[in-house]
Image 1 (cartoon, rainbow over the protein chains, first blue to last red):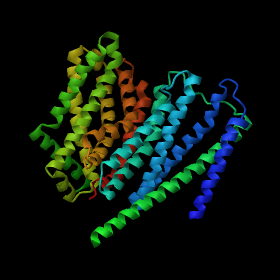
Image 2: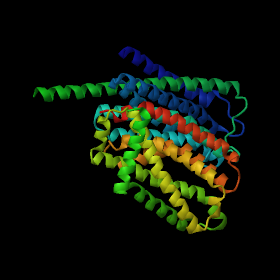
Image 3: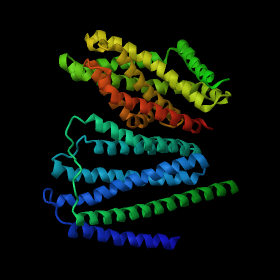
Image 4: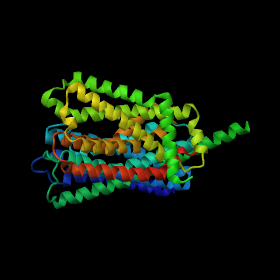
Length: 224
Length: 226
């Protein structure tokens, strides 16, 4: 297992270098936006990772409620942490891109609003976790939030789209993407998916070790 | 005891409790009227502005007051040990949930209607009564959505260390669709357009209510399980 994770780690580093090279050297400069458009490869890939991470939270939460094994709660909370990290990065990279291109840091576009609401939901997820001490109870509560929160996202998306439907949308889906750009995009997406996996792997192992330490402490206290 | 009877028994218990203590509705009502008054100074609500802001002001008042009421109602249960009695009673957990959703819904609707009447007198606001049945319908759907999620989450937050502050933090992001739909639909009706103009918002509210009500029925047993 140790070997697999190491190989995965090196692969991530290699792919990350390739991605940087691809995004900054190989991909052509966008005609209107210029170099700033290059952040888009990372921005979109990170957004995808946030979604994958929250999907893991959703599934792990359901499995926890069915099986009552705290392992699934640890997996859910680790994935939620990573999802929150990626959501924060999506918001930041989006703002960096929006300022030169849209001339504003923020606009109440449905996609942006949905991401922001997503961020709020999972921040609340962690606030609840930190306010409950009993592990079983904490796991049940956060599983419920993990499920409700994930299901809510498409509805938030729909409602925010209808809400601004009278206004012109700033972010219209671009028509065809240049083939080279598309290839770089795919490469960066794969890179970040591997990165996500690797992060989750390490974070989850850390959580497992944490738990083992807690268990050992308990045994020691009981023994002494 | 049949399921429905259990639900209505719990609703009746809450109504009786409220008749004796008069804590939940009165504090919610007082708060929502205060919000309406304070918004007047914040936005100088007159003429055109009034019609534009009224749906938002009213719903913000309802939702803030609703959070207050939810915190209050579960705290009452917890302080007096009522929640243990509920859990020991031979009814399904989801029946407890449904009963609580109904009682929170009823209390909030009472608070909202009275706030609406006060709003009418304070601002001489005729649009409020332009299409009363439609408005009450929207009020019902929006408040039901609030109560469905609010009851589930207050069952969670009442068992945490920072309950009063956690409830809104958890509730508001999830409720964004309800807030948008309710405010938009209310605005449409107040402007004198028909209910069919607001049909997509009503559908969204109905979908939200049904979806999260069935989901909460399924997961509430994990919230109350001890």
